[in-house]
Image 1: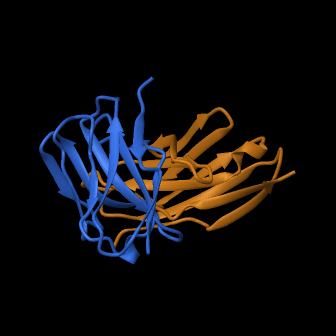
Image 2: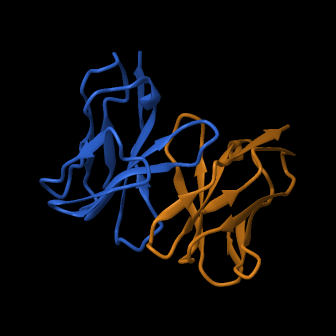
Length: 109
Length: 113
């Protein structure tokens, strides 16, 4: 079966750095995607990796290792507004997105 | 600005009733999707469409139907609502079928009593 695993909840301090991990087992691979979802709101696209390595986008970076079936989202200089759930999704060989259950990130002052 | 809107945002209904959730997008995207989101689960695909008159079943399609008569709209119908269909429903669209960058509506919270 297809499976995406990510931690249920993480806590971090304002101004710090946090890494949210995602491991996957899917039928084929056509990219890995990270979304941010604030409570009660819609998910919004953050980043996309299709090749191994690090993609940087301001305070957010995403890393992919296809051989290990592993990705992480790195958030730097955390702000209170970063409190949200972070969803990892993998596009399989049929171009269907398989979603993880999300990691709820709590930022403390 | 282009957008995707859902209605109603909140609905309470009774078991056995028919319910339709509307989704309207002005992105001019051919590709539209319906997902449900439940605690402890990732987003699960209900139905999707790659263009007018095209509809396809997703992972959890039982008890749901969609129709695509134009580019802008993909209404989701629950033929006979069940308590297991209490959930938050998201409509989304994308520029191409292969794109994982989805644009989501605000969500519709449905409670079936």
